[in-house]
Image 1 (tube, rainbow, N blue to C red):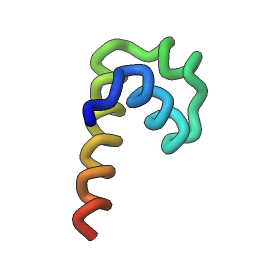
Image 2: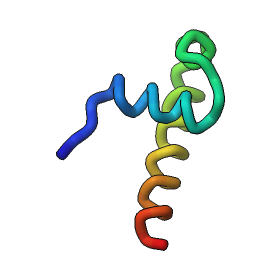
Image 3: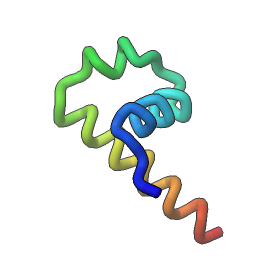
Image 4: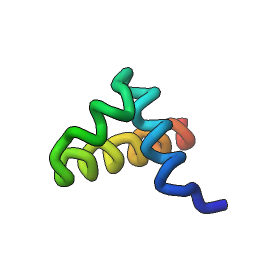
Length: 48
């Protein structure tokens, strides 16, 4: 089941211990980098 963007942002913020306000204040490219990083971690953890 596909996740929503809101879910991905909240999950990433939780994992990285940052607030959604902090996330929103980041430049767009940094937001994408953090979301991508979190997605890769989830995939890697599912293979362990």
